[in-house]
Length: 339
Image 1 (cartoon, one colour):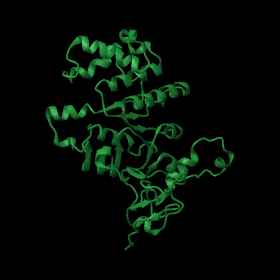
Image 2 (cartoon, rainbow, N blue to C red; image 1 turned 30 degrees about the vertical axis):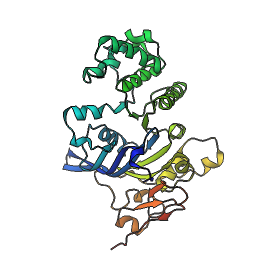
Image 3 (cartoon, helix red, strand yellow; image 1 turned 180 degrees about the horizontal axis):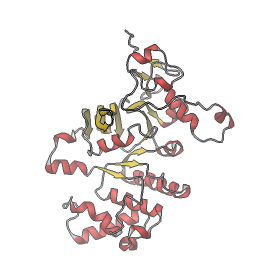
Image 4 (cartoon, helix red, strand yellow; image 1 turned 90 degrees about the vertical axis):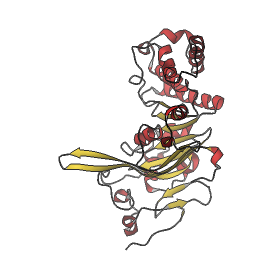
């Protein structure tokens, strides 16, 4: 992981695992949705989280939001393990982490007005804005902050466009003055021009309020535009982490290389060099031994089946690491012998 002081980290995730029991015709099986996740989030930065559907991104988001309890490992917000807290202490910690959801049409209650949606968190956190006058004033401030008119407070979500609805969702996330916002595909349901407006808004809010973002997306061009660092997930594991420039331009893990090669580009040479992955994505109910990507990797050898790869470091840039026995242009930190 990158060498940063504890004070610089708002979030520390170490060796987090989460397993679900799935029932089917063949009986009950264990689905390992998260397997040994290590992650840091620094204050005021945007961490992009990318990977194929089903790789565990949303499960990780729910775990960080304290909606799921990890089976193994630790999650620490500002150095505090949320699962050791109860009552008012846990409620105070929950204020610090909020979420913007993917679908602005499903995440807002059409029976409520914009003001009621924004003010709803204060029904639980009653001490934040105790008087009706304070709440009404804060609602108008938040509407203005996200680029809506204060007079919109009486409108229902169905009277807003998709982009306006997502701005309303952002205003609701800001209502508790959080330190971190987890953005789960926040612009995927929007038109391109509206996407740009919402992304610019998120950037402006970060500059003004110092908020940290975990930005989950399938759209690599969006991630490259907004993220300071990128974490790449595959089948429940983080396989590569580093600065956005380093991961996009100097990918070390074969899976990351394949993802980057599939991104749309105007460069004809880049289109010709696309990496096509062979084989099916393994089932998380029965993942491959050792490296989970080995069944689709052109560089896999016997060692890849024998053990989970250790971290691989790029000596040119501190903090760019990948889990791979055969990384491109990196120095392995240890390859275990195969029995």
